Amino acid sequence: MSSNRKIALHYLQHANWKVLPKEDRELLELATRAARGAYAPYSRFKVGAALRMEEGQVVSGNNQENASFPAGICAERTALHAAMSVMPKGTVESMAIVVPQVRGTRPVTPCGICRQALVEQERRQEGPMRLLMGILRGPVIEMFSVDTLLPLSFDSKNLPGKSRKRV
Ligand code: THU
Image (cartoon, rainbow, N blue to C red; front, side, top):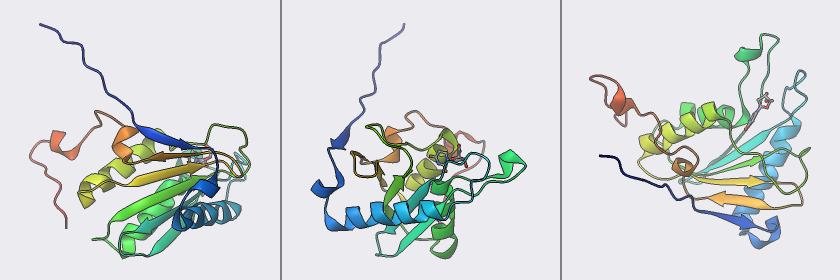
């Protein structure tokens, strides 16, 4: 027997940054500033990310490229790994992502590898991570969990004999 199943995707689209609370605007601004320091001589696509821990610390990151292209890393994972390397038991409450050079109405959303890394962090911290994806002087997409971006994702529970413990 077969059954039809649907996954609903819930997010907010804000017309601009002004409608957001101060701490969200600050995170988006920090991501914008972080993008300026990106090392992206190959793509010339500078991405900034900034996250806020539940405990209040703020960490930013940007994309770092390499002449051997696959060696590069995205802004989201730079920020995430920097934060988790010093706060291994921390909880990421929100992450903002901005590509200042991208204008229009459609904010940049994380690539597939970053979605996988962010979803693993959600499971590690046993709670949702909010995402704010913003266009400079434009709209913001707000998502309440990374799970929304990567439904039916691969999980360590799928690995034989493995379970992900909060260590
Ligand atoms: N990139 C990010 O840093 N984050 C994204 O969400 C999309 C892509 C980077 C990777 C690479 O350095 C450049 O943008 C072009 O793909």
